[in-house]
View (cartoon, rainbow, N blue to C red):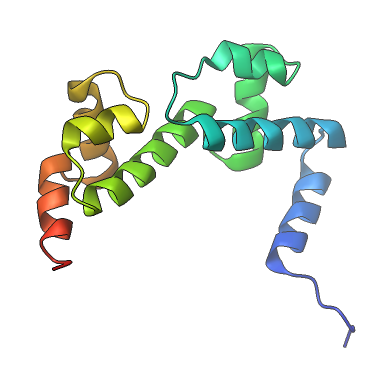
Length: 134
């Protein structure tokens, strides 16, 4: 038995490095772009600018991001925003405020994305979760 068995994360990284023909610096660029999205999800994020910051064309960036994370950058950002919205709604913050706090400019767009991601409208989700806290 080895002294330090590899974690799932280490094994997964090794598998990725072996199966994906990408130079190591590309992984760093993609991780940085993901961290950028996580930090600035509440702002309007232009995919063109993120791709340019990663020194890739928009189309190549999308391809590499999906290859590494299994989702497109747009889907990742949407999932991140919905996840943050769920936390805020559970605190009882108004749906309109949550919409703007997580980076959506339009309440109907936010509501549609939220319902698609959770199966509930933002208000129904809030009522279901906020009422169960007290």
